[in-house]
Length: 329
Image (tube, rainbow, N blue to C red):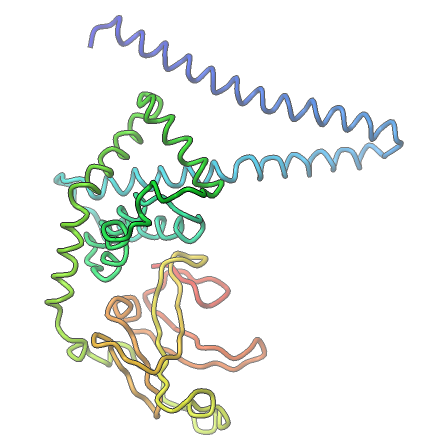
């Protein structure tokens, strides 16, 4: 690259940095000006100095929270795009499973926290699940992108504040890719992949699921249930709490405090690919996707001072939340 051209690019970059710094200084200046006016009024009214001081700290905290919230969420979306595009890019790098899982957890967290998340987030998640071999979750996200009319951007006519802020930043990047070249490249690459490969990936995941062995071939001992303790809960039985034939479904979903969360449902119908475990008259159902996250786990019913609930002791969980239903791998 010619030296003059490099200098021009550096000057443009410096100008943009100075504009961002000036904008930040302007926002802080407006805050301090407003605080100064309010503090003067409080001082004239006879409020003690320490009260005015703590009021200023509290007001600054609120200002930071409400001004930075949507921006932080928008930044999380674009950071997810960057990592997802790196993993999905066809190059010679070999990605570790935990790297893909961490990217998936970030995307699932965005879906749980953001109302009306961009369809591109669903596609990136579906493609990551496909790469990870979790084809049931891949079908869930990719079918939304390929077959659901609500995934068309034109269907988002009543955006949430988070989505509106995301679109504003996205359009700014599209108008001036040099403002964030890596992010712009990642977004364009994911959009091309969404257009050209979403249907292919969806078909691939469905073919793998159709060719998967029946759930009866999975070793039941991989998810042992604790032996019942005599008279531990003599008055609590499935028959008393639910109609005859009711079964407990245990599943793992994205979300929660730590990335994944357990879900417990009472059902009377069993899916064709469910893994069924029977112990002491109780039947537990687990779908094939959740089996891999629950392998080696113990499922128990605990009745203590806090309350009665199902608990899962999962040896694969690296961390868990105090609520007992959320964990990370």
